Length: 599
Image (cartoon, rainbow, N blue to C red):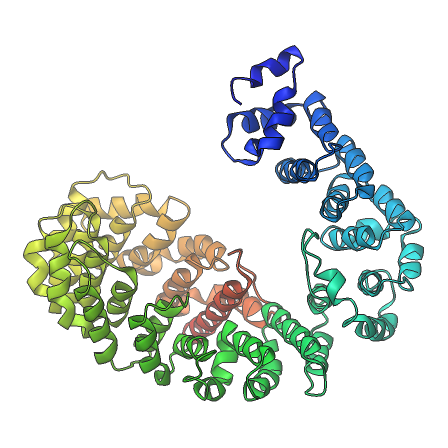
């Protein structure tokens, strides 16, 4: 392929069709793909774009699908109006292949002007195209479409469409253009079509298949209709409703909990009621919904504990209970660990029960057993995480950890360093072995085990005064500031770290307070608040403010705004449930910090 690309400049484009047919152009890193993307970036409406759009009329369905995949990727990289691509997308709305029509509809919405999209929607006789267009429109600037002349009339007509999914999507879209007084009537019409619209909205060819409940919940959360969203979740999950409708009610509950902080309190009783029913798909979905939120897991802890031995949902229940520090989960977590469970939050659950003071004997014994079952050159992550969670209580595992230091082959035994450091002074037997490793992990472990200032001072002395992004240096400087203070040179190193925005600044802030005290107040108050919304740096900034006590009172207004917000902060982590739990943790940490600062 790559040998053919230069020929394009001479007028030969055979390589383009060949690359689409073979699939090479869909492979990131392919030379011809890179050339094509760079060429189109340089001239969006140039010959390369028109040639690619022309291949979309090929007789072969896989080729047409591949072209629209490429065009979609190009639009993600180079967004905005794109008339040449919009022309090809509109022409493909009549394609015989459903998947191509759906892809073309989504592409038209991404590249066409709003008035053009509304006109195509109004004229379309294909229900699949109407659904695909409206789904894509709902994910973009809705206000831009409602400003188009005739859009409101089109939506009003589509609310009487012969296809239930079209009626539902039109009703959802009408929320934005109708007076809120009309919302109850729209709600009732949408409710009437929820069941009948399910199959069409789940069509695999759509760019983003959704259930009716997910579509409806997205609209309600976008309009901040918390009470209505929770109320409809309750109604759809009534025992008298059909199973699929109850599932959509649970999905609406999950959407509400991800959006509003008070929603778990409103919805947990409904979810626990379903969990206590006979086994069903709805029961499993309700349990997963409970498990997705730390607040809901705490409120529904007894219901989760009641199903710990259930072969279908017991693992999820144990993990959820563990993540809120409930000791009842510990035996079940240990069994999951020894069985090689793939529960993604298992290590998190062990950390939470360890922080809550759970008995360490069984988890530590399980960790040692797992380490003994593999060669000394291996360091399986889960048992290492579990041992680290229990810290000094995992001292019995020191021999196995030393064996990891002695048996290390190609990789530095970083996990062994970390666990030995969390164990602390009880890991003294590992000190001679740690001294053989001139690494950051070994240095950190040595300091935590020996509390010897010389360990930290040697490391810092070997590094320049102007430090940049050295996390270990920040940790060592913090320890030294707590244990006797810094030398003049170390103080300059600390100051250089604090000048570096990002991780270094946050990690060095505690040391700055310990070393300089109230004299650093103005700088800390000027710098740290920007990190409060961050899921990684926010908790660390809160700890510094807590240490500052009354000196941090100027930040109280900002903390109050965060605490009183009804909606979740929405840190960008890419996973909705992880974002929800992160907000729950950050909210709890902020409330605690505020109480201590206010005194």
